Amino acid sequence: FAQREMSQKLEFISICVQDPRLHKSDLWHTYVDYEICIRTNSMCFRKKTSYVRRRYSDFVWLRQCLAQNALIIDLPKLPPWNPFFSLKNSHQVTQRMKGLQEFLEIVLHTPLLLSDSRLHLFLQSDLSLKKIAKCALGQTRYTVAEAIQRSSSGCLSPLDKASCDSDCESSSSSGLGLSIDTPFRRSSRPSFQSSDRDLELCSCLSESSSQAAEP
Figure 1: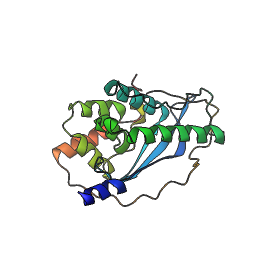
Figure 2: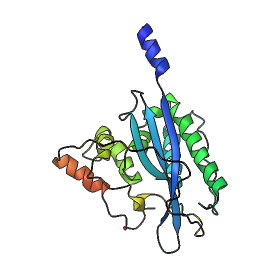
Figure 3: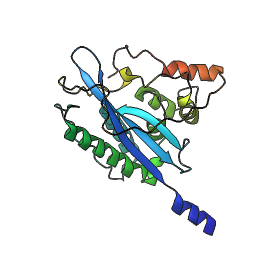
Figure 4: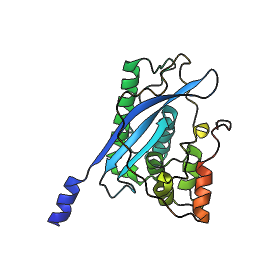
């Protein structure tokens, strides 16, 4: 009992929102996404270290999902949406990253919210929002655990931007690839033998980013 209590005291979840990057969705519209880094020894997480990129509207979607399953919990607020957000404005960028990180910190320290599989897929897989919703409902041939575990294998492409909700920022934004914080260095990733299920998962996560954005 004493050993278990000590283990619980030593459990930690460290999360960081960093490395904002500007992307062009078309000739006139741009958007910014951010890297979410998690380091933990908690048994609640499939991976102890993970990196994934999400944009502001993805966080809005996540909060709406959590609200559906946590009616009695007062969820933390997200930083307000700014139609004139610009990556050139370091204050705006810093404040948004700080707000997104604070949101996730509160969520991850709320035990009831950790039971939502969509949260884990959001934080530790490269699945698009649509695929996250389907996987959480058991409508894919791969499980939540498989989607998370295999998201780091070489056959997967970056997050399918086309399936994210629209949150286009000011077209005056610039500074492609600008990094406000120095990102953590990636560790080498394990490889997995291919199977029919693996190939389907890879195919789902490698959809062309040129397809029309989903509503």
